[in-house]
Image (cartoon, rainbow, N blue to C red):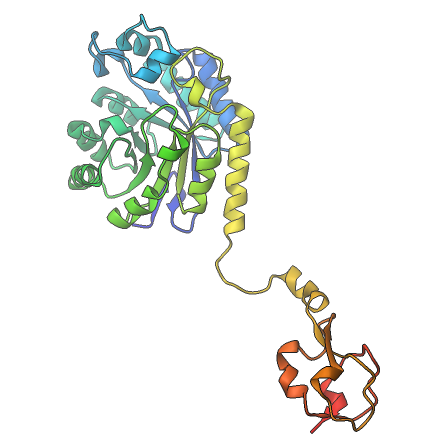
Length: 350
């Protein structure tokens, strides 16, 4: 399956890269901040804006520990449960955000972390489901999402090829074949020498599905390179300000950086072209100016037998091409050929 339709837009081989601006939890639990993130994603030119929808009670026990990066970006005295609870938005707030995104004419996506969250998104009639890397072994959730009849975007951080294949099998058997796989390294931020962009091709060859990148590196380089390698989708975290408190801000792009990234991706797409090697229109205009021709290195009298010493190679390229040098040597001049004049076929004979 080379292309998948999401909300009337085809994603995959031969199509423009589908860019997801990942707001995640960078709203810090504020509806107003979340709306500003939607505005920013639209302004930057993203195709979709994505949030994470959850209830702390559904995804973590009170004793669950934070990841190390979360300890480094939030209070070490706060539990993972309390941190997640602090970052929740209500169901009504999510409904409001979905409507607001529709008003702003940008696709609203969300990552659910529980079956109840999936059901809420289904009520909101989302166009596709994003599944986070950490849920790829959560087969009940995969099955529940797959039965909704919507395209799925599946991140593959922390996975082996075998685990990706097992997850796809669960999804396919539940009735959904439209899956976009995202290569991902689940680290915040990912070190540049660990992003392993060649895995995009490995995953594509292994599963014959559209493949993109969920990019957790700092900066824009990896996303831009991934598009040049054929990534059909780019997902990138962004924030209103990296200095805001919260677990994901430090590894996110600020608004102008997001806009620059999207602009660079579109430039890369234009630069990729169609792969046909032939002169462009501009090259055709300049070709005869910068190519060279055979010219008279000295004055060549009429009826002289032309030798190699009589011939020079200079611009412009409107005369006999240098590749035909051996076809000219040994011919006789039909007319006097002045020094530095172009040698033409009309001026020579056997």
